[in-house]
Image 1: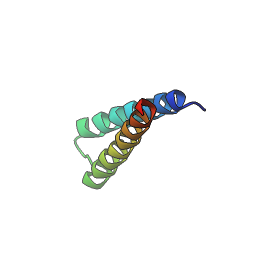
Image 2 (image 1 turned 90 degrees about the vertical axis):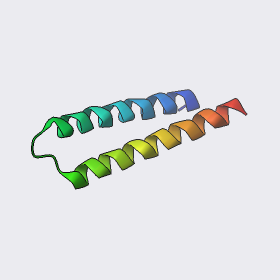
Image 3 (image 1 turned 135 degrees about the vertical axis):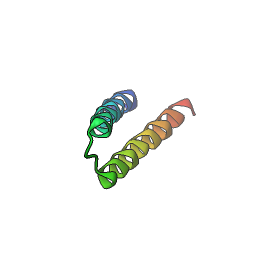
Image 4 (image 1 turned 30 degrees about the vertical axis):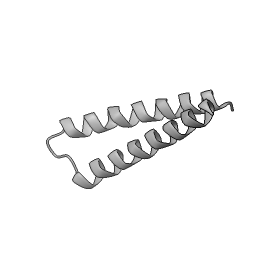
Length: 58
C-alpha cells in the first residue's frame, strides 16, 4: 500500500468515526465513555495522517 493510499484509508476511518460520534451525540442517552473513546480514536487517526503526510514532504 502506498503512503497516499494509507492516508486515504485513515481518512475514511476518521470520517466514519466522526459520523458515529455525531450519531451518538444526537442520541438522548449518549455514553460519555464511548464519546471519549471515539474522540481519542479520531485523534490517533488524525495524528497518524499528519505524520504520514509530513514524511512524504521530506
